[in-house]
Length: 104
Image (cartoon, rainbow, N blue to C red; front, side, top):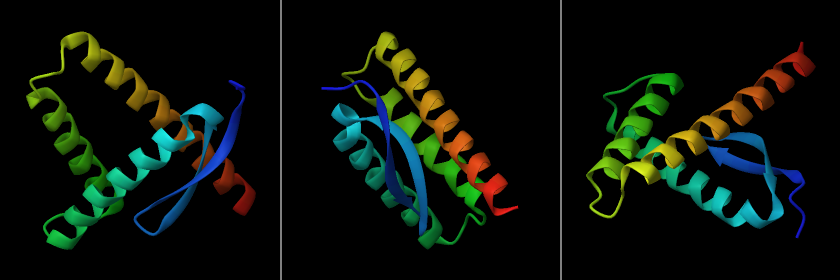
């Protein structure tokens, strides 16, 4: 399989994002996006947090807490998760910036 990334559409809080992702990681990305969407939807539905940025931060904090509390996760895995989250965040930021430029 190719390691060359392709654009994958993910939907989070009623918005569509294109994320570069190798074919072999597509299913994991889609599952991750669905899981994140579910968490963010729960937070938004709760009504205590307003604004996409704040909802995203609360979801990230909740997910980080879940990982840290997990008995099966060691610090090496946490570092790996942190790196992966930063990479995905960079991809999302780059894609959003690209589309903002195209819209202007």
